Length: 71
Image (tube, rainbow, N blue to C red; front, top):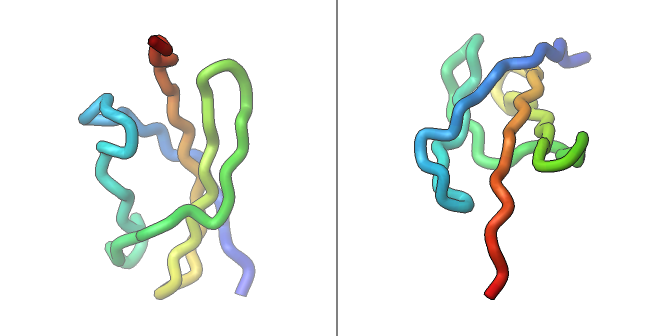
C-alpha cells in the first residue's frame, strides 16, 4: 500500500536532546516509535519520514535544532 506524505510542522515542547514527544498517526491515532528515514536539510534543520504500521499513512516532520556548545 503506498503511503501518502504531507508535511506537518512541529514545535518541540522540550528543547533537550531526545526530549520531545514522539508523534501519533493523524489518521488512526496509533503511536509511532521510530522514524522510517531522516534527512539533514540545511543548517540546523532535520526532516523525518514517518509511516504508520497500522494504517500505512505517511507524513514528514521538520525539526529545527539548536547547536550545543562544546566544552
